[in-house]
Length: 425
Image (cartoon, rainbow, N blue to C red; front, side):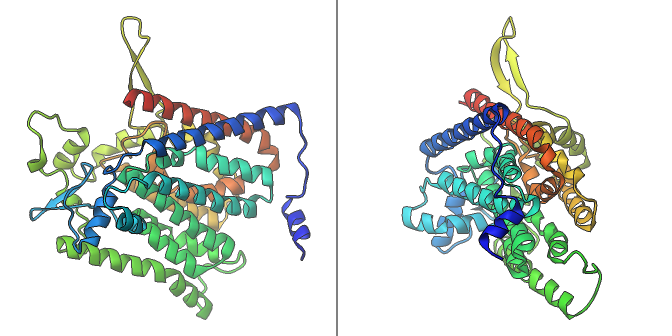
């Protein structure tokens, strides 16, 4: 098969029909993309040193210790008189070479975050091309996943520890799906999902879904033979090693393989007299990390809440506040619901189960991704799975509506980022 025939089979050799509507919508999408690029450039320019705790964690490793001299956020742990950066270690490993060269005041987390963002987009381009056989649909879906979901917001906040971890974890989870679906490489899929686990722990739940993606469509799911055993063992190698590393890391720090350090966050000794505690601090201290009492709050923001700006003053004309608990990804980016138009085969049901499991755990968590604007950043933990089915659900007939909806979602995301930054600054 020649390259030309392959392109023809994918539908990529079809010249686009330029109509006034297509030109106008394309121009809007290009301008929005350039606006995001400008916002990212501004974020890189404004990044300050000593703002990301992963720099402190990397520096502690370079100093031959697991505890840190300081941390730059509220989520650090105090254990036996020592300060620990509690977050999974992989993002610090990514930053380690740069901290080794530039020191703990390395201020390049934003460029690293943007590079991860771009790499994710390139991988999704290949995934969408394989699933849709359409250049136009693939381009729109790349714009959707990059600029209409929480990913853009997370990339823009990559100078902070939580957001940097989320962006790196999303890249590894995307690479795992690409390895299973496009490259058909079980070892790479397992290694990447193991790396994702060391950024965002719940991505370990992707394993059954990745196994389904590796199967040919006519291969029985529960057939046990040498090929199946080899496939499972190969896929599980990366996660197995990652879990061992994480357990050993936790044991070395806190004396238990299952203790991540969250039991020791927000120590009262760190309280500043007269300083009011955040609701997250009060939740952790009084209700715990997980509680059924968090479900109504988290569910409303996951499914029903839209971006909300507060006005004040006598005439209610003054911008005065912003709801920093975010907004439903399905309201900001309704095109995500096209996932339900995908064929309801075994891939869909296992993928849907993965999304539900990951999402359900976060609905009982003390935080829903605070702080954020037109986003629910924890949605990025299950979004890569959902995007596979968005790609499988769209049709050429959806091209026009998808372009309009994607443009709307990009506008909302960009507008809320701008307003949130204005009110925060």
